Length: 239
Length: 374
Image (cartoon, rainbow over all chains, first blue to last red):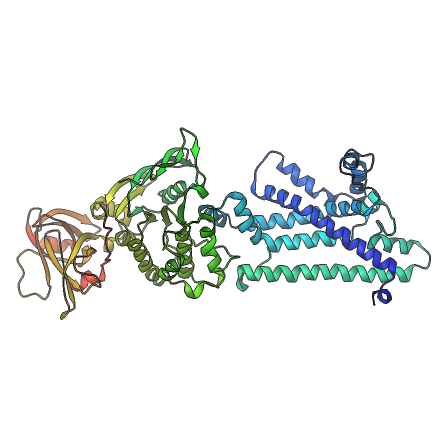
């Protein structure tokens, strides 16, 4: 069935996009939680700088981000060399690098969604939990995290969708290798570059739209359901 | 026996808190106008606030000692806190809310879970989410949740303030039942005299961040200066006398209860309490009539003989009369018009009779059983 619907190359691009987007969103989650929590709750020197840093991928040309990634995480980059030497992980020119690029590009979206959610949590609930015997970590796990869950899901899916469509940083950092780093948008770009590739490009375009809309719809439905369960139907505001 | 000892100072902007008091077994009410520093004091006791200097201990265990740099975090204090708003966890059912402290604190709650659920009438709510509860229901769940966390002390911050009159009537009996059932010391904050009279054994009066009086409820709250402070000039209707009495007999034929104490007897509508039970009454000064001669042929059943101890102007047209009862057990306040005081030529030392209608007592009575200790 799948063979008739999608060509093997398309299926591969779709799977690669999905994999890099999902892995990218998931690995950025713990860092996103920590960053959003710190930005929402703490006052510390350099807070403004951290805020700017987090948002840089949103405002910088993606090519610049990709080039910076290449400089830092490439085989001869300081972080890349260290990773390769100590952990045996190579990021340059493979799908893991594409996942990293997706993570970095989706990070601001994730942090923004999480930060808004943290801001909206009633701190008085956390105080109440402390008086009931919960340590600060326990409070985070049992009260704060469940309450921000709708925002967390939204942020995660936004980051995922952003990663799916990542082009500039990815192609700069890990190039265009079919089956390895050729995600949907890069495959689409390749199709457009080759003579007679319009039909292929059109098919990839439709695929991209379906995937993006699907992710967005899933996020909205899921988050709305969760908000309704937690806050009741009358307070169904966006968090 | 001192259980809780509090001594602290804390500055916040222009406001400075500097309070010290001790609480024993039973119920201690902290009363004062809003902004007096009541909530800040409770937060410091619970470990949610950080006083600048101070010392707080419960049953010998030190929670705060700024000189020795001791600060025990709230989760290690085992103090139950019922906040002004219920603060239920929105993502958990009522049952899971109740169990939140139970799971963490453990071994055994002071009263079994089923009994708390019964006492607070929560059984039909257990599977609900907090957003579907009324204010009174949510507050009852919050009280249950605090009780099940096995607290050694229960703090309550205006537990009834966020509720309307109907809901208050709904919760008040639960608080009274709670107090009678548990040997748990309770400290609660209120700006409402009625609440303190009904629930507290002892009272601490706070004004502008300082303790201005503390002691037995009747002793402290019968003071004219304290009543004026708490009620303000405008609220003459609420001034009155608090009397701690005992049930002498019940007269079931006429549906009356006879109370004794403070050297006199009073008839009130039948109270649902056993003979000998202590009862605290609040007589509104408005409801006390003064006669300068021994009255005869009156329908009023409660006539108390005494002499005028104090005469104070109250508001524009009234005089506040303090009547020392003949047996000397109490001073009863009566509010009469200036015109009446002039025509009757009221003056201090004059023998008078205070007339109290039985119904009047019923209308302004809060009855409760005081704790057996001290």
